[in-house]
Image (cartoon, rainbow, N blue to C red; front, side):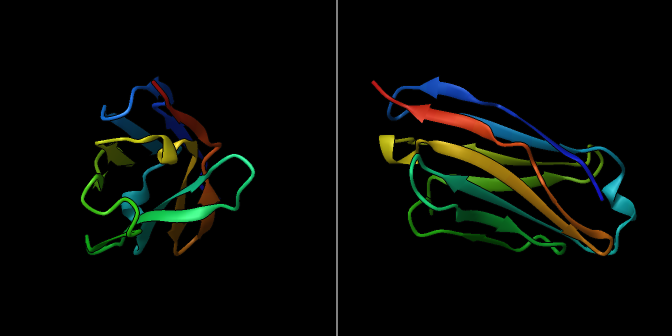
Length: 117
């Protein structure tokens, strides 16, 4: 099982940007498949899918973040990123990265994003 470490938590004002990072504990380039995803869980609500990036580079976004969030990957650094622009209070949540490979599935520890004026 691969360990994932997240970073980028912060408190930002509405309309500002924030970038989250998720790094694996080992080289995932050796895996045949590397399907990444970002989830978020607002206070008192269920966890929901935010964005995905698949092994071949295709991406998918929830309608609520489409056009504002961008997911990307750096295979050399064994990392995935979530660029969040035009943030609003509804984006406030704990954010979790997720990785599925041919070896198994792993979750990040979560990082808090708070959008408030």
